[in-house]
Image (cartoon, rainbow, N blue to C red; front, side, top):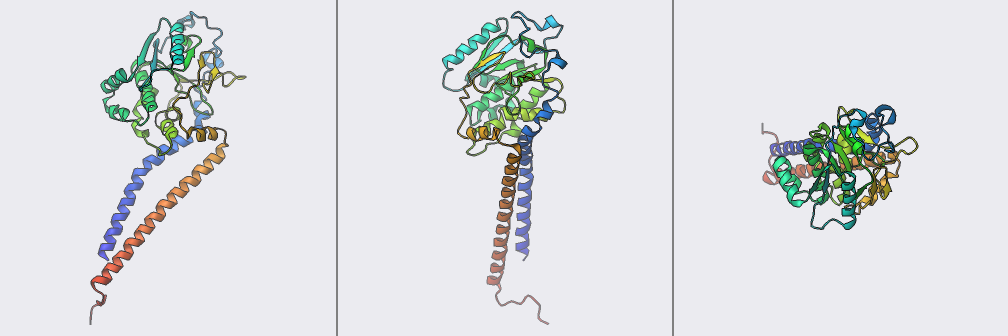
Length: 344
């Protein structure tokens, strides 16, 4: 029986360790899943508005030669634009044309073009503690996303997707510390971000990458979105204690999606080619969930977690009973005729 108690004790220790290790995973999953439900409240004070920010969301009142100093504002964001292209395939001709449009609209700005060679050197030199993780990401787009945050933290400026063709200058946005366009149905898009160097929020996105680095088997889209993509970045936004210095570029009262970069759209700033070249098959499921009532999504998540926890508990109980039965059989074989009481 002593051996059985020892095995029971070791089993309980193992279960406790597994529970302790999975607690962090459960917390991260909870933070990711709750983001769409709390986004409107988290972003309400960060959404750019005409009334509070005295900002023309249509950009129509800003001339081509506009400078933030014309309205007595300081330029908090440097005049820099970053484009990133990693992987063996060259950029598509239409992407190069889109980038050319951005160069024309920002002639006085500094431009960075990141590729496999200079990106690897940059990450290794500036973020050595993240280099191995960054280099071993299973998907190229994860390295692209992480590099967005790293370049913005180090240099500041604007990082743009290759499929964004600029229609006018982003100069009016340089008065803010951080700007990104709202996404549908919640969160913001990382296809266009502007930030000041060493921005607190951007730094948080960089340093949180290891904590959210998790692969979801058979779900590449979810893996990307939850580890480095828009959902990840928006989740980190909701975890910030102070968000008043950050801005989400949404739209006007009559056109709330004015600046959203979903699909093939024209916004006051961009023509979005809507390539979404990295989307995998499971993206269809996520797109379907966008049009599903959040109450049903929450119910499905609760049922899935309950089934998972119940399955783990049943497996532990079955394992415990098997160990107990083996102890009894082993004891019977060793001393089949021995009484458990002493002779008087």
